[in-house]
Length: 352
Image (cartoon, rainbow, N blue to C red; front, side):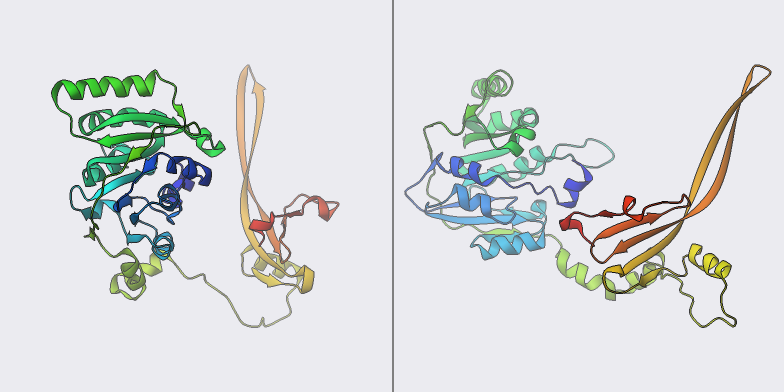
């Protein structure tokens, strides 16, 4: 997963239209419990269980998304899924759309798709239904676990442009422990389904899965309260010791000069970063920031059939301006004839 995805904690929710199609795969006449271990804001779980007699549960790492899911009517635990525990065979439906990533460790790193499935599949009752949303090429690492614990496999293709981009599919299966020859037959079915069979179109008509009745469930969280710890950190003795190293205060010089400054004095102060700040009024109000830039010039010449390469390093100064209306301007040592050639307006969403 790219760093941008990790900053979102792997949050890539199911497209709304796909949720409506998945809903057609499920039927139930009796109350049951359903869980989404990566519930996000809860939209996907609400879509696939719409109009069903369902009690909804979820786990979400991000505090704001967990709050949104809770407000939508889902009983939500905020924290790491691997610190959340439920009784075996508590739920009739497991909707799992895990982060598409690997562990980051020194050795034996496993795919998150497999780890999330390993942690949660036991929560399903026998005859409970699994809806597993993953990139198709990541299903292969889950074959042994799926073959030993599920049956009734069907693989569906998602048609949303973002789903096509990530090659997402939905594997639907029914919880049933398998042993011996039955497990080997299951493994063969899965391999054929994943590698040799075109996924079914989710928009076509398909026989639904019937969800068994289950009583109310409970999820226990045994991990650390991350938000509470984060709020307490700034007042902790440990933070006071490391803060000067992690967040050093910028040195500021203040006071009036003894004599009026000449142009050379002002130039030295600017290039030293001592005149950074906010200047101007109205449309010309802007933030100014100076910095030093190193340039390397490489020259080649031949002398007595020997190529001589010379590198010359020099420093110049650069001034970056960000205007109140979103324009940006970078002034370098090269003269510019028209200011408008350098200025550009940032997109509306990223305007300063």
